[in-house]
Length: 153
Image 1 (cartoon, rainbow, N blue to C red):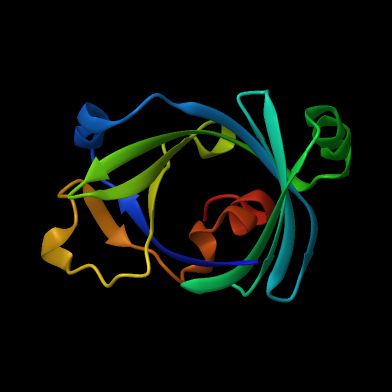
Image 2 (image 1 turned 45 degrees about the vertical axis):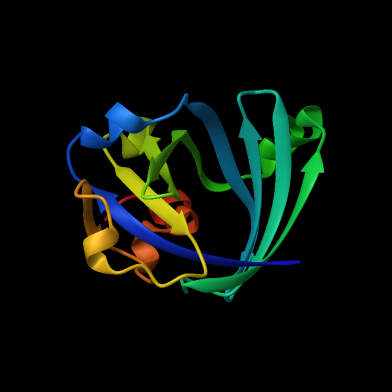
C-alpha cells in the first residue's frame, strides 16, 4: 500500500507546454464507488492497464492500492463503468526539481486542465510555477471520480 499525498491546481494558459514531456493518452473509468472509496481502471496509450483502489475522499492524503491488469480485461470492464469514461492526455512538467502531472481533458471535459503535485514536502507558494491557477485540493468537484459521475459543474 502506498500513501498518496497530492495537491491539485487548475492550470492557467499554455506556458506549461514549453517544458512538458511527451503525452500519454489515458482512458479511465470507475467500476465501484462508495463512501470515501473508489475502484478505478486506467488504460494508458492502449498498451498498459491498472486497477486502483483508493480509500479517503477528496483529501490531500489517501490510501492507494494499485495493480497491473491485462489491457483486454480493462477493456472488458469498461462496459461496467459507472458514470462517464474520462479521456485525457497526461504530460509531466518538471519545475524546480518537482514533477507536475498535467492532465488535459477531452470530450465533455474539453478545455479543463488540472495539474497534480505528489510530494510529502510542503511547497511554498513562491516555489510553484506561475502557470498554476487556483488550488483545488480537497474540492471534490475537481477529482476524477466526481468528474466521471457528475461532469464539470
